[in-house]
Amino acid sequence: MVVPFKSLRYPPGRDQVWGFNVQRMERKMNEATFLSPVPASYGGSGIFKVSSAGTLVGLEAPASGGIVDVKPYAISSVSDRRQTPVASTDLDASFGVDAKYKITKSLNFDFTYNTDFAQVEVDTQQLNLTRFSLFYPEKREFFLESQSNFNFGTTFGTNPPGSDAPILFFSRQIGLVDGQTVPIAGGGRLSGRAGPFTIGAMSIRTKDARDASADATTFSIVRVRRDVLRRSTIGLIATDRRPATASQSNQVVGLDGSFRFFQNVEINSYYARSRTPSLAGDESSYSGNARYAGDLYGAEVGHTMVGNAFNPEMGFLSRRGFRRNYGFLRASRRPQHVWGIRKIDWEGTFDGLVSTNGVRQTRLLAGTFRISPNNGDQYSAIYGDSDDRPRSPFMVAGATIQPGSYGFQDVRINYLPGPQRPLVGMVSFAQGGYYGGRKTEASFNGRVPVTAQFGLEPILTLTWLQMPAGRYQAQLVSTRAAYTMTPRMQVSALVQYSSAAHSLSTNARFRWEYRPGSDLYVVYTDGRDTLLGGYPELLARSLAFKFTRLFQF
Image 1 (tube, rainbow, N blue to C red):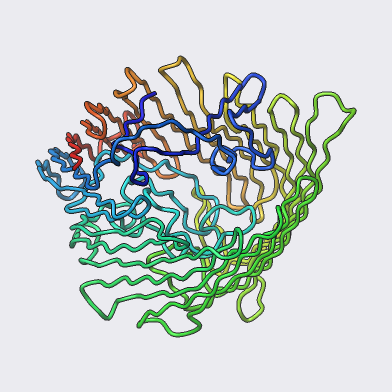
Image 2: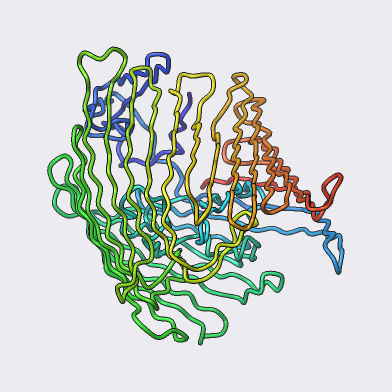
């Protein structure tokens, strides 16, 4: 392993004293060993506890590395579209540049012009069995860097990001509209730390995109957090989405706080307001929750309110006009005389949403029993009792769910193999009621390391619905394959099939890092329609070549 001094930043002076630690994972024993021990309570994040690291002395470091990185790119692509009524073949060539100015050892300014993300892998498809929009994670390198600096509030409970609690800034709102790419003209970002402050500020300008029905828009955000007490923070956020038509602008401001006491007590809260000229009503949202996360016992309570006109257009929001009350209890045991069992967990969850005028929307009661053996495996069974009351019809796997009041129960069984197993991932089976009918679901999401250089990551989800109007089924199958020829050369492919979307797609990428920080990409993508019989019909395909070169000054 080689770490060039030029890639690091440190105080001036030839004599340096650094913190240093190394972690070794022994998968067969499910054991982590540190060069300098860290408290076991930190778990997998212990390697980041620098205060417990060893002291590295005796370095005679040269002057700190360059302060400016410039990475220009050139791209050439050909695309073939066969959709009716107009088919076309387009040739395109473009160029742009990304630059980074290192203001201090922990504060950076980034500039981007004519930004392109042709090398980024396409989204992994999901099967939507709810009446709300799906949440897709960010994959673009520019927005992933310093992403945590822009986080606001917390999504408490076991729900994934974007489930109910609003996200005030979601970078996928920039440069993407309904999955279609919107060209980015350029922008800048300031991110990092200055004393007790964590700073994130960004302004990005997008171009007009007729295919996506998107006007040129400026997206701006300022996010500041300040460290207080020992492990707590307070902060503010302001976002501004300003299309070419000023009457369609949107602004959001908010305050939040995260307070940690003792080892396991945490309290989080926020208050935010939006402003959208075309909306009238309650434009506020607030949340508060308290959590105790001990080893043998855990508990959490929380409340969130989202007004009927709260509208974070630079964020993500699944629904408006509700109040959510959430409660969670956990009891754990570490048996001393039960052979092979490390930990047993019992969990209970209450999650209830009502409209702001008190009418019930959704209620969930869930109980979980989990066994964690010493070998790293994990087994769990989850019982759920749901009450959902949609106010408008929606489609799931071809079935139409009508408005009404639906109460149903289901059971899910999960098996998570330990990390030392040859087959790693989650195996899940669920069965139970579903909006007046029955649902059966089987899925696997994992990784198969075929060799040290070649691996597969299959995803398989099979769903069967037995509804009053008939029987429906949906399949989602995808496989990611990656082969690493050398530490700097890799080829990967993602093939996906969705019966619900009648689509078969392929995304293949070749990457060669011909020198540190400089890359050559070759990317092929196609999409096919499986609705008609026979071999899937080609809808569109593209081939792109992207060349980047890093200069450091």
